[in-house]
Length: 319
Image (cartoon, rainbow, N blue to C red; front, side, top):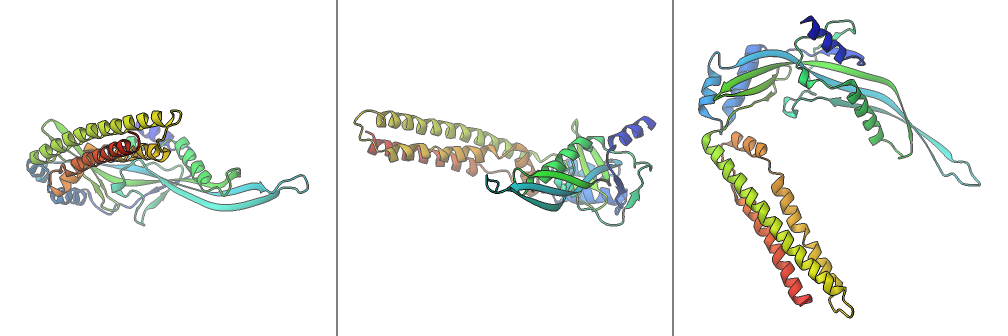
């Protein structure tokens, strides 16, 4: 344990102030908040929920996740208006910068801690245990603060000086709840400071089957969209080759219109690709409804409508 505490202490070298957030919920209250959250999911597997409701259904571990708050006074210096007859004019501007850095899920609301925490002096002991997978290296915090300063720069050529830098660490009490079901471990987290939860759970067989159908439909739709894009590209290449011929009467507006229609399948493919399996499972698990395939079919049809327009333009303006 001493070796682990030493490792944790070294992990925070470079930070200035340390705070321990208030624990507003007990371990039992945190576990009950998780159960309430699990009950709200209509697509959850009922056997898993029943096991989580049991007294020993959740393996609980209390720990802390660090949240990093960075701040500094940034001074920007840049010059404008230099010429042979006049000296460049120097400009100066100061701005207070700040940002919060955490590796935890946004659903845990780690940056919304309640008041009532305590200050830990630099020589004080860090709370234990700390969930080390959520540590952020000091150099990453420095990079983040410099990037924030650059993003706010009033001039791209401005020199930036950072003063009064503060690298604060807030240790947020978190309850980790693990439930084992059918050979898999589902790890949930409960923020004991503000009560926010991130729940992990298996969805019902009905929802799982629906997700499978939706994924298959999306894959088929992506294939159809790709063929539609190839179809439009073929017409575009043929129309371009005809327009480049000597004495051609093919209007360039028609060539441009055919190539512009490529944007339609590109947009459809992007939207289909954006529907990740994890997102489908999350939504289906929350509302208990199997994902429909209308979305996938609609974008496939829309792409081929674009291909049909390309064929019509090619036929009227090129042939």
